[in-house]
Length: 265
Image (cartoon, rainbow, N blue to C red; front, side, top):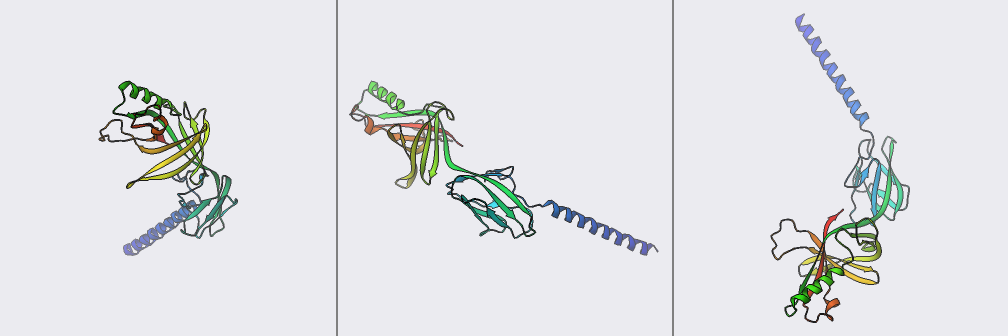
């Protein structure tokens, strides 16, 4: 009798465990609803995806839950989407700016929407320090000081100002120049961006047209002194002004300014 009772108890325990596991499995399956989660890398938050045009660094948007295979569609010509590469993520291509919506549908026919706002990509740079360098072995100290002051005065922004480069095309577009404080009153110009090769190195170059003048900025590291032992070396905009001041200062050998960039956000 004891053996039979023990067997009955064990059978009951196994059946109960299996039943509970089955319920847990059902709950898990039901909880895994079709969705697009928040994704800080791809700027998705609360069901809204902020994308950029032109987009040269495409990534995939991951799909969670539901039942594979998925299908994906867009309601606008400014955004192309497909499932060509991965089974759980869709690829995209932005073709313009504006609003769109992506719809993801799973094998059960369940669907979820993702609102999309496409804006122009931009580089936002705040300037926190201005500096200038003058070299001329035959120049007097007074002349060097005077030229340095003129070079600093030629910079179109103050410390605290900055630039927003808005890419309305692949390698250029509109630039907002904030003379006094970033994010406030600005002047509008145009720019193109390219690469400058110097030996084995390559530097980013911005050519800006503003107030009827053309400026060329080279992005370089900023070393405030001759030593290069600084642990964290910031970057800045280097502008060569030699041609601009040679007539007034024939003995000058080199003159340039640096606008130190504190944040790119």
